[in-house]
Amino acid sequence: MNKAELVDAIAGKTGDSKAGAGASLDATLEIIGSALSRGEKVQLTGFGTFERRHRAARMGRNPRTGAAVPIAASNVPAFKAGKALKDKVNQ
Image 1 (tube, rainbow, N blue to C red):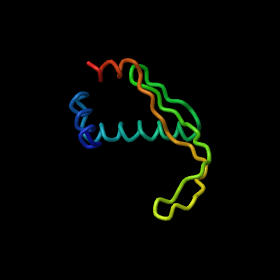
Image 2: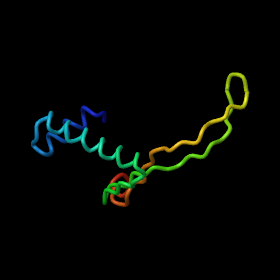
Image 3: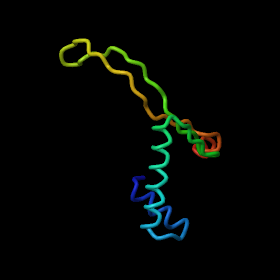
């Protein structure tokens, strides 16, 4: 399912217009992204938890030359599925 299909499904489920559903989805994603950038956790009961994890600096390898390449430390988004979502997927 891509974003357009998700917007269609939301509009069908809520009775809202596609434009309204798209705006709601965009706002939700923007709010989650902003919270993660501030280092906050976003917990959606029954769905899961979005959080920011720190990835330490490390050495990698250039696959073409085999030379060692330093990879800088970074923060990455992470998602952990909640029990209800796991149960639904495993039905």
